[in-house]
Length: 284
Image (cartoon, one colour):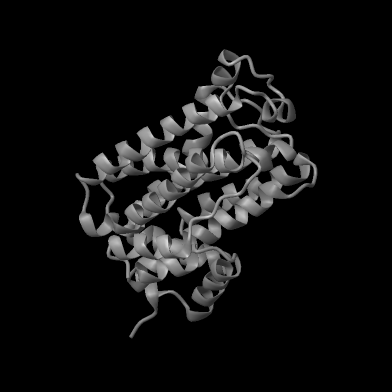
């Protein structure tokens, strides 16, 4: 039996190790995919992990930017058939097998650069939407192709689901982000509620729960749009997307049940519910 994607075993092992060592549920969740698709997803994740780690480096931005630009050059090289590392070699196979698009990889790097070059504080709605598209929807556009659907409808799923997932992340991490002097809640919502555009002051403002509830409604609308778009896609290819949607919707539900006036209290989806989500969508 040939190796997944026809890649070298050592390269596949190196990519899988990056995903496994990240310590997230992604590694186990993607194991239900057929080997070729699973390894394509692992390679996409490994790429995202690498550039995310670069962007998270606390070093001055002028030292971070060349490393992000090095990966921009590597992406260009991949589409010319050049691959110099294990991750690149497996990515190249995935690109060739599933027609992954160069602009989506580049968008991911653009999103990481947005986070690295300055502390994002109260972005306007247009900037927040661009950020969500780059750091989440672009990954979705790569993923749906690896899942098995390269249609425009699948891109619509990625567009809406990426925004839903990222807004959920933002709502989950409001207090944690404020401690890092970051505030991803939209400027227009904060200004309308007369909330200071400073992370720590905003965190303590009495009107902040209403702003969080408003953004949660936006997230719910994106979840609903993603599910509508899934109806026009290849059902089998949408199974992983449905599980991701259900998992993050469960987080949003838990956040709403906890209340937006207790932002520093973490929430966790019980293991039984995560298992039920997987079974419900035929992933186990």
